[in-house]
View 1 (cartoon, one colour):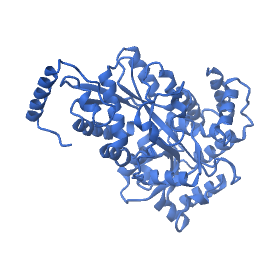
View 2 (cartoon, one colour):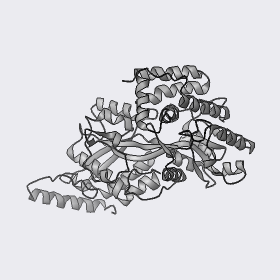
View 3 (cartoon, helix red, strand yellow):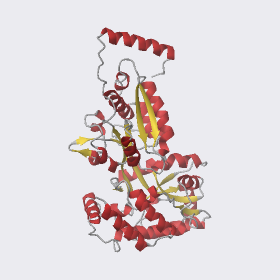
View 4 (cartoon, one colour):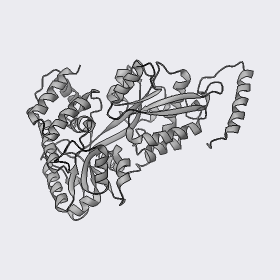
Length: 445
């Protein structure tokens, strides 16, 4: 829909006001479908202002542009995109806003945080998109038979590789399936460095180390997530000693290898997120541990229109060990709708936005082509617009994936991310790290 002129809009509002007055001033409830909710949610010709707390900083600009497009399609609604401060978990920020009595209409949360707000957020079970969700996408956000969250994206992570750099290193076409063990990975690192490039960069952010890398040790305990959950319960109860845990020690052996080949080895805590994207995009390093959310930043530095993909993080020298050839992925980032402070009109406008994302061409374009998101909806058939998304879809098609740990405690990344940073910098040894992991889990209720 084209944006109408200000004069035409004024005339339209005046006519609507007269019509509503002629009907006794009644205000019909906003429609739940994407076409009707935005326009009817405005009440008697007035604007409804809604807001979304965004915790995916890498798509802030794209979200702001999408909000303007949504507003053009729904003239009765104004949508503000609020950015969660860098380094702050969405749980912390949302909790602070609730404490101040001014929560946003919508909040983008990590999966594990949805339950903490279940008494404050809207039941979304009746929304049409529930029937179009990919399998198991709402199992972790459904309580007492009610789904409380909109699944925003499927995200995966592992070693991102710059294919032209690796092609040069191996003297041909690099095939990620050839990396089945830690020794294979080490040999690849050596080949990259022999070609004149640096093997990889290890980004030291606590969220990367604490929310993504370390949790691989939990997820690879067993293919059955029920068994993984039992393992976590045993950690909470202090019943599991990690010193001899095969998966954890295997992962840390791989991390030791990463430390050795890290381009920032001499100053391992000095790097920032953008540095990894720059060095990989410019082809100065061959590999970066990160997720598909990093594509917009990599693309901004890629001047050769290169190809990229994922290598899973191997945890042993036995090719068939679970995790060695499986990419880590999960439905991540959920959008919830506040019911404590928002008005019925705001709630309907928020629902309209979620429906717009799933069912309108412009919403789908935002998700797939602008934000480089892999949607969690079967009804969205657009292929991934970027090479990292396509790489993840290839692993999914082959069944080569493990479920990411998406319900970790909110402070896991900060506390154990800090422990991993000490280990990365040499300020703490493996024994200290393992002790801190065990002590952390004993404090989790």
